[in-house]
Length: 503
Image (tube, helix red, strand yellow):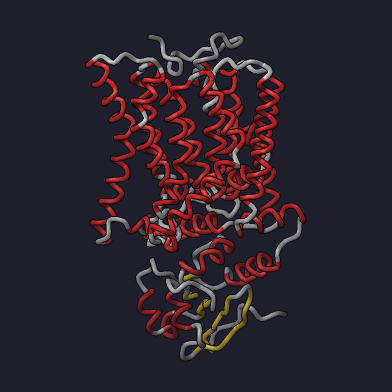
């Protein structure tokens, strides 16, 4: 049977049977042009945030590690940074604006695929445009698209994989299954939760095949099992390989899950008692009930394709289940996941009178999502900076400190990037800093005066920042306080010139 996704590239003058849209009906150049066009609004927001000196913690971590590898010319100095894929793409040109630009392009790809996928519904173009705008022009979508590169990259890859996965389970096109599995395996290196979705999609193969009215002959059971393995194997292989490498080199196979920068395991929730987890279910249920578009789409499937409802409910419940276990799943990512599931799960060939209702539900979901997402500290700060167009004092001080430290000689500033990553990222150079990845770090920590001219310390840095933990009470022998900015203190060796002296 001819695949609805994979075939010889050919242009369609207009959609024929919109139930099975093929990604290759457009050439890669056409896709690229449309992705760039859909990326423009996100790029505008990203550049505005950059002009206002806003930098998310996630992007600061990525840029700092990329700067370190670029300066030392050795990838191994970053250790087992996870996820590696966002870091490797930023490494091409490590600057503070680079993750936001790449995130905007990934979000533009998602928006384009959603718009393209809506052709299946055969709704009028105007209403499809309004529906698309109503779900992407929200604080949740804009924050993910500009300040959460690993998450939006993983969502982009999962959306791509979904098109091939649906073609695989519904039409039995084997090559589409291999593509879906490989893309999900790649997505593991962008975000850990892509691995969980790969396992979930593999487990839902029997239900989706049943929804497609597959026969129940013995041969079909083996076909179902094969499809499950093809979907899950690349992600399982990627996760197993990464876990094994961590075990061999660190002695702990799950080092990457507990790394503070990764934040896969929520330390406050991981060890919570069962009774407390039961209380969380009420919050998760309230969150799901605040998604009117998702509920409406599930109702439409119950009306048109009732066998799809159970697997779609399982997918929609996955963010709640992940957090119930004790893993970190940010509220913006959860809300973005709900919206993507709602749009991708829209039934084919809907009556036209449904379109205005869908737009209304999408607007209501955007409003409720905004109420939820603005409770998050960093999202609220980002929103306040953009709406007021006022640069925060802390960002100005961070940037000024970074510019001053950038003038120091190579490896002359003792610092720990587990706490100083934002300063190093804003400096846009790791050259002045002597960091834990360097061979001389341990010796410099024991006797700073013999190795470095300056020491960078914060009284509020985490305990993992060993430099701050050791010297936050006062300068080491032979050093004096050079100055303080943005909550950081710079100690300088007595014979070293000042970095923070004002003219």
